[in-house]
Length: 313
Image (tube, rainbow, N blue to C red; front, side, top):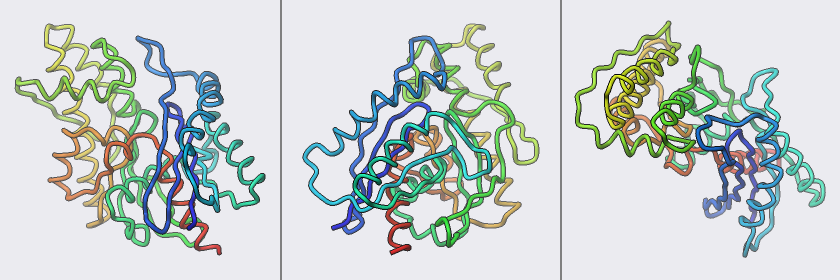
């Protein structure tokens, strides 16, 4: 029975997955990169250093007790599928994947981190048939806030074209900055959500778009002003998430008007937020990944690897 290995060394998570194409089961191991208290991120040099240390640990845990034959390796080698897309942290996963493929004399396939996110969402939501269709996908995380039109492509499974994006802060950056301001540990998404669900005060939010693009830096100032003006942590957290939900929802509405009725898929760590997910799911009948497959992971890359290998056999 064939198994496919996926590796992803993103800016904040070291991850590896094994996909069983016969049963459809996915094994996954991942580990967050350490970030000092009070800080909102890592320098790329530090991210590379931590990946070098953590990737052997993650792969060792993944293969502990594993019995099977890995027939191909997939790896995230770049952030997006656009010319010049590059981030040093992905070089750690790429180098490791190249060695594994060479030693075992098996094929190596490279994908973008964004494609992996989209594929993980399709796998988790059990709508992998969308790979053969045109659909709208949102990738919303600490490093990206984009909407892309996804279309089948015989050479690379599917092709993405940016339809809308943030013009300043990414949604995940906003959430982490507000969370750190409130004294939460980075990454702040889960803890911010816990605070937000206990808020009982009325919220009044009105996001602004430029076409279908968004601007989120002003929301950070609004949240800071509210908190420093005496509002509770719970209210401030809920305010932040309400603005993110309102903004992403408006972007989706504008894009569906522009491109016509399309299936909608939400991927990326921010979209694991249950408050945002519940409301957008009802409004747009959209598909979401389970939380483990929303945050950075290598499962989408392992899944794409299996498709690519089967096509080329």
